[in-house]
Length: 449
Ligand code: MG
Image 1 (cartoon, helix red, strand yellow):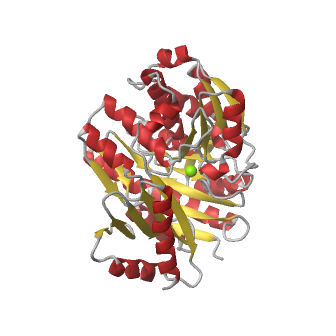
Image 2: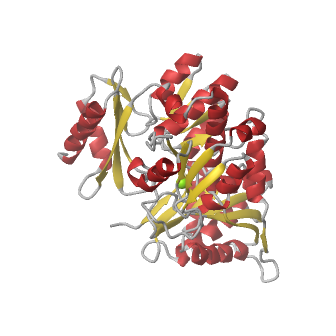
Image 3: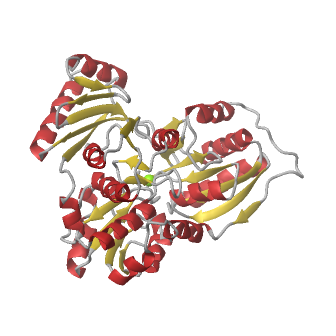
């Protein structure tokens, strides 16, 4: 199996197989050449392979004359915010997001804190293929300085939002169960919750990088958090992935809401405060369309991938957006998926509505999603997409990204993953049975191609 995934937004692989120090140094060097020197912000999640890759990245950046502001272990959104607000030339995050423990990677940020787009990333890729780097002279190498305020800066940016009433939340004294999966969220989320007057019952909040569970915050991986919510009678449970850009919510009854509903709740709250377009990717729950219709605002759909959503948000002046996998993007803080932002919006929503999280969830349009994956061994992803496009030619199709077939109250979407050698199949319908049937049917058709 291929263990190095190279894309315009960065590189991701299994450490020691595809992802070596040479690969990391080469990309860092190419990125440093691309930004043309100056200051680059560096952050990493807590993965145990992070320190080794950090050395490689520092070597690559400083060799081409970049000065580095090193944030240490911080969430991905914290690095994005710091890159923008410290006026750096760009940023690098050492993370493999939700991938398993043996994976790691580099994500590259432009000066505005957004991930590189196809054109920018393509130029870095071209530079990475050159044999000779644009090395600085021996006395012009870059310098490395720690920057320790990034977490505080991030928390402050959230608490200063005009629609976050810190005192109102504090008065509620919420009891919050929190699962950081021993990732980077542990350096920020307990502090954020304490600032909001919450009693925090933390599990796996030490950023050791030794993930105690599958690190993707899917319902099936949140058993311990659900049990903790029930045992401690918490008001709500929050779980994040290792770099803390994705957020999942557990109700006061210990039920995972499903990550699609993280964004749905945030959109429902924010549209009460501000009117304007909402931007989500093509495979995000259609509950967002229903909520947008309730508030009379436009919902715009993009290709899957944070950069596509973020750029369209900027173009249309969106008030909120994100991805259904628990990625809330609030442009009033920055244009990146941000679990800390999602937590603050959810707590304010709870405080203002004076309802339980379960009641808020039940007030939302109800759909069920089935998410499947097909390993690509022997399957040509483009051919599979084409076969489905023809098979469903008489239906309403959305070809923004792969193929999405839409019916009145349900849809199915198939596309090649950007980060793993798989095809993703998502189906959504009003009932679990309908969603599972739709997904299973398409999986069968793909495997027959
Ligand atoms: Mg992530």
